[in-house]
Image 1 (tube, rainbow, N blue to C red):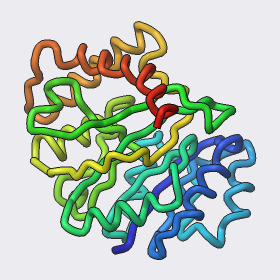
Image 2: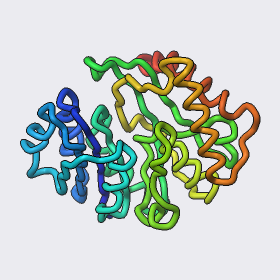
Image 3: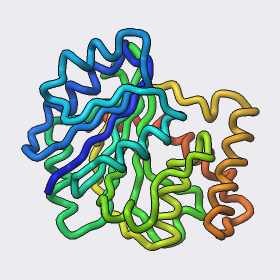
Length: 253
């Protein structure tokens, strides 16, 4: 199976090289690597051009934001499996894609675990997002898998659609809610750390941001004609609290 890895970036000169290298170092032989750059002005494109021999498709043009760029990547992807690796992220080891391809031979989706690392110290762990197994109804209990560790067959996007670009922060949540909870796409859980993500997400930085994120999460349910529990949208961010402590378990393995 061919795997299409999509990276979107904009003014990511400080991190994009790590991301590209982690894709090019994958040991799977059939990777289509697509990079969608939003017309960066900080030298990002110069770095990308240094690796152009390993990048299958490189597009640099203005876009309407990350999710619009991701949709452009999905549209031109020719792989059987779609993977996303954002410009602040790297794969945790060289056999991530080969393992995903092997386990998705008879599955439409797969997700794994993710660790957050320091911006300037990619091996210094700050959070450990251990996804845990999905069961029907998990989304109502605030569960969701980390989006960078979520791999989906292209045919699922063709059937159920791509990212809703009207959402600013919850488009990935809405897409996974739609695929898994609404339409019953059953994901395989690979209990391994698949992605390292640099810390710095904005949705929980302030109370105002958290309230806005809750509003968007609620919109994600409404767009799909679904009803969460009354506590779903509040327990969802609370599930992140243990992530700040469970990363210590990694040091004891």
